[in-house]
Amino acid sequence: MSHRHGTRIERWALRKVLECAGYPALRVVVQGGESLSPPGVDPRHTMLVKDRRALALLMLDSEAGFGEGYAAGRIQIDGDLIEFAEAMYQAARTVPRRGVMARMVSRWLEWTQRATRTGSRHNVHQHYDLRTEFYQHWLDRDLLYTCGWFPSPLSSLEEAQQVKMDRICRKLGLVAGERVAEAGCGWGALALSMAQKYGVSVRAFNLSHEQIEHARRRAQSLGLSGQVEFIEDDYRNISGNYDAFVSVGMLEHVGPQHYRDLAEVLRNCLGGSGRGLLHFIGRSRPAPLSAWIRKRIFPGAYAPSLSEALTVLEPGDFAVADVENLRQHYARTLECWLERFEAAWPEEAQMCDEEFLRAWRLYLAGSVAAFRCGELQLYQVLFAGRDCRRELWTRERAPAQTTAQAGEKPGSEAWNAAMS
Image (cartoon, rainbow, N blue to C red; front, side):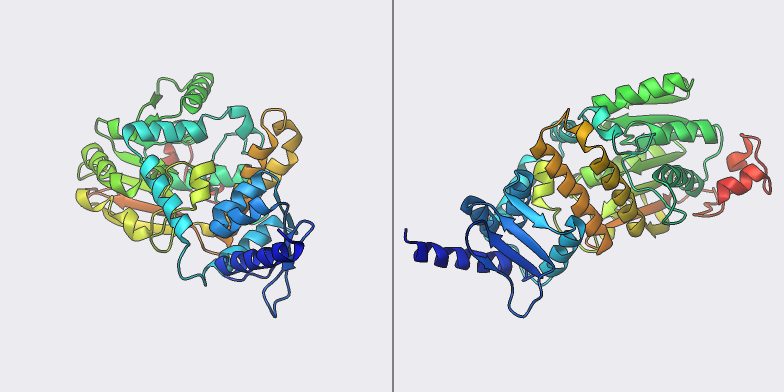
């Protein structure tokens, strides 16, 4: 192939890459070859493509091609990675339809990563059964891998996660002696906090062996093994009667095809008198999650629109008591995680290879951007059965009996601290 002919092919490929991406303010450079940016645009970022194979993958599927190329070190970004991802999300809104290859990959993943009983166990294992030490490098000390609630942008990640747990408990109006079911309990922090601070008993379900073992050790060390039971099992096997149900960061792994399964669990566990809370990543309108994220990070994940998520409540005739969107709080949570992730890179590099770490860096930075620009939302939905007589005090207030078991009274220093 002549140099001139090769140059024409490169320029054509670069035009296709920019077209598929929605013509962002970006300069694309092929190492040792051509460069191109949209006409009349002052590029804010430069993408260096190190070889023609990476360029071809970008052209076929700009999102997955970029993700794979960046993870492998064959694509580099000059400038802030979060700002780059924001610019790409904003430009992508102008693209009327994803390419054929992107749609094919997305549908293939939907088929191969279905959240059946067997599929869910495999999907969970791929992400949550990574070594706990990996997550300990960049999560808070209690290993909460979900959105925190920041009293102010300067609040620490630890404070934000503690406030998040207390707000969930106050929204539910938990009272000592009640029974709570938790679906998808992570490393156990919320279940243990509910038991320790609010005096409830908890049965917490999770498919991750690594997380369940860690949670059981924590329960034992805190003397809560008799009050909190951590069960390594599918949410579909939750049985018994409960006063409250809570799910934080689990609905994203259920999948719309299995919302009826979760609806049946809620109906059977809560009857007409219970109440519950769903905390989940969502979207403003129905759309599949990034195929690259599903392939590399979260197999089988789906972020529902609010209308889709509410179909989980309809079969049980549950009423929505409150909806809160914590989108900005999740953006800040992810910023904290990314800062800690970058700081811990030398330690992480002793456990993981460079490609894995670069993929996770991109996932965290891209997630910050997605929440900043509204590509993703974070919903908390409080709901109750028709016969629920509990007055659900939402968000900032709670009835006195919520903390009475800890000896705290309205107006006391402990009460004021809990309510702040």
